[in-house]
Image (cartoon, rainbow, N blue to C red; front, side, top):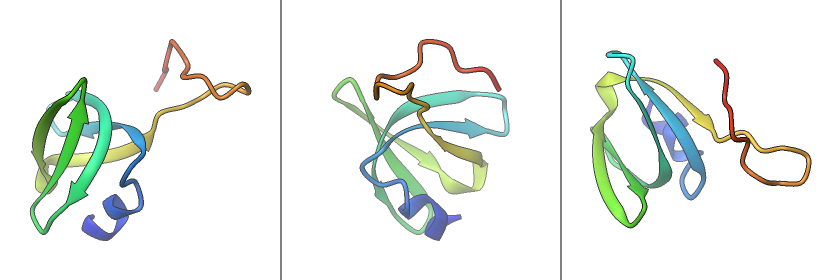
Length: 71
């Protein structure tokens, strides 16, 4: 998972965890056991063992973030 998460560094993503929690933010750093995510100037560390899915935030044809994301 670490190698895959490193591909999203610097991108705004949606991160899904086992407890059905979603976190949006920009991935700043990936270490052996966690990723560092920035949202609104605040940093949060998330354990890689609890991450199910990482998805780049979808954008429309004009490059703007979509207001509704359906999964």
